[in-house]
Length: 116
Length: 111
Image (cartoon, rainbow over all chains, first blue to last red):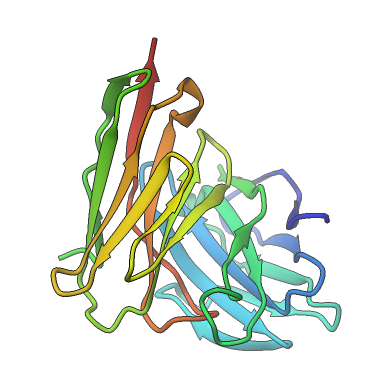
């Protein structure tokens, strides 16, 4: 079974530009989560989508946004990039059945975003 | 106080040693708990879920103490391949929601 996939692997942008990151969940998973891991910091929750709807949002400014498509894949958009947005962006997917045993999150390999 | 706190390490241990990691969490309403493993510049991979009764998977044993809001991971007979960062992870509400990660404990297993 294929795992969570993300593209691109690496992305280099300059300040003020926009970045779009993509994620395809494990087949059968309806929930997609986005996390940011800045150098030396722990993973910080960004967004959770399930069945096409945004379900929860972390403490990030509105220029971080996303969407989930009917096939459950997802995009994360970061507008007006700032230097401190440089980080590894990880996508995870899970079922959403309301039980920890079934809703375990599995992570993709990440997109490393560098803002110059 | 951080929501999830871990000793960052590094823990340098010889092959074959037993090593224990601890983690505390601040939200007493937290309902599910996990240990993930992260290799350098890679994604986190689920190591094991942590249940109230404690659980074991081969050389790995996880314990949860809800009263003390404390989670532990014990690794017996350490292998070189166990070298990684171990992330303590808490889901405050249980099931399909945001995970709160500790900053991780680095383990280096040496010959």
